Image (cartoon, rainbow, N blue to C red):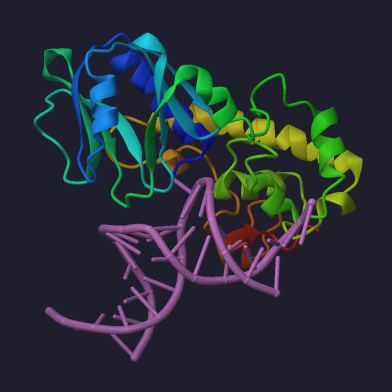
Length: 263
DNA sequence: AACACGACCTGGTAGC
DNA sequence: TGCTACCAGGTCGTGT
């Protein structure tokens, strides 16, 4: 479900609610994982960071949890650890009876424990963080020009840009006026540079919206605050030109775009 | 190398 | 109401 902005909101809230907390015990609820349960017991949460759509929870003793929320995952602290949601995947009892919950109705998410030192290799294939200095227009454009992949599919590839998903890839392409099926190496450098800027702008805006809207349990309603132009709006008028938004299928996913604006 | 597709899971909703 | 079909903000492995 969540893309970079929603995962960022999860991390920021988790820092407020769980940083420094001691894990008294853990329980994997769907499928037992005794190694993980034993390894986190008695450790304190020392840092929480996001890398692409992964939540990294660093513990004492150079152990780290990697959580990927995939489509429906969520990670939050509840005041009373006994009140588990029915869809909880994992439960970490913290000091003071509170609980860190990995909630995941569709059970597509991932939770693993690794030596902190091993994370770099594990996540080594991910592309640059789009909100970091490493994501420059120059490197984005030069890499893009070497690929014949359709623009939307390219943007969804985590090895090219880390953290974009179906919504914000579509929105960035709409703002840059690029057709989602256009091969990257057939887009001008000028337009690719514009696309780079729109990726950053869309994500910055969406992070703010997601952080404002997110409150823990429940869904990510960032759409309430982030004004989507095309995503999920098949048949509705494009807010820029008024033409009907179209939906096509790319790599098994729905892509929304405006046939008037995007060429 | 680059792409499409199914698998992984569950739940919500539209249509008959 | 009850059934079916299809949809969903992600990623991986396999096949062409």
